[in-house]
Length: 367
View (cartoon, rainbow, N blue to C red):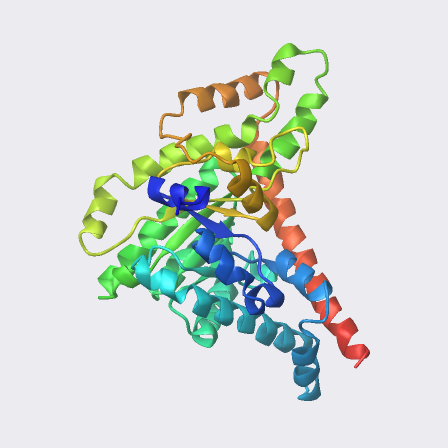
């Protein structure tokens, strides 16, 4: 039987994870089907859980039971999401074992309202890790100034971390540095580096959405039109070059001898938002070795249907730098764009978190 294009990506060195979770996905057998097609992990966030809980009655029975016990809204949210994460992690456990800890992970977001509070993020990460109690779960921490120390501290405790909401090259470099610092502390404390993994989640499509709007305001300029749809992948290429450099350096090589794994770059927000672009644009253009791409199910299905598995991104980023320089000449600073996207991203997850709690409260009122 021929391999799927997702399995072919795995052979090229790129793992594909699913950017979605719901109870029906877990219980219907659909997730196991997707694993059979080559999916190697799963990511979630407050927006995804908000959609899952609002979309039907899958969670009503558990919400009713927890409400009957006198749980607060947060406690109910906590138990609901952790139940899904544990069940998904158990389904992915064979993948985790087969790949010797490379894949098979499920990600859970730490309360997004703690994004700017280092110590609270650390404590919440430790609490969640103990409550979830699965070796193949990553806990998501945003790449804010407050987040970097939390990332190092959690890794030093042996907790897997998915660093989220990375947009800029600067954020990525700080993220990689935080990872190296965390592993350094873990090793100093005689911890087992082989059992700890992390990914650096770079958000992609939102950059094109923001930059394209700015380019549209420069109507009549041929260069502006020619740059549309190029900023996100160019930015990703520069990040991939930085990754390749940082994890081939002497500092990491010494850690690697003691069992440390690289912190892979994960491409997130890779569903195509602009219908003018290919529905698999951010899968096709970001195929790179030793990376992860987490995709919504419709993008996954599209790539299975008409995607081609071939390496399209390398550490050679001269052309990408040219795109960024051209944008700069037109008055568009990608660093400013990324800073605004980070700010907006934190707010969006906070709003989704509030919406999720409101959905739970609404269901309890009708019980």
